[in-house]
Length: 252
Image (cartoon, rainbow, N blue to C red; front, top):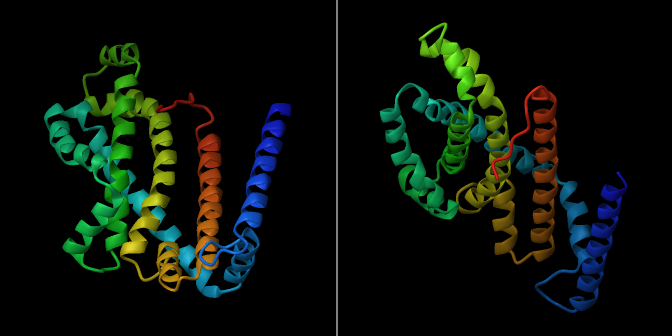
């Protein structure tokens, strides 16, 4: 506990030093606002109902897309247990997506769907889908083969083997994949909204950039960071409570 508090104190002092240097060095700058101006803009933005509506809109996009990615990614990931040929087909589609930037996916989505309300959901889902798929695949590679062999002594029904032996071992890997996808989904959502949406936190970034209102632009970035951290902590807390009886795994 002492080490944690010490690290927190050091990080806090370092952050304070950066903010103080920022405040002193850019006080005469036109474009780059000072921390005090950003703080005032931050407080001002929180007083607007539209700000909370935009936070809500982005949150809905993130978690609806994350849920859709889970519903698609996990079944695709477990196909290898039932049929390796089907897995090869899935990888042909999903593997290349990992190397396409979210901005490029946004542009392609505009070509496909135009500025439709479903376009941001499509961008976020496509961008994070490979993460859920790969986490599930990795879990399949790491399952205890001796448990599976023992189960095969009693039944050769793959669905029963998957339900009682394989899937319980996949849960920790899927949970880690979801945690990581949550963080990525927020970044993708903001990028997509900058290009596409007419609401949301990314839309606010684009709006204040066009107006050259840099204090509110930076204040919006601060809101994004705080909201992202909040939901990241909530997801990790839920992961800990729900999967307390499972081994902790890392995808590093």
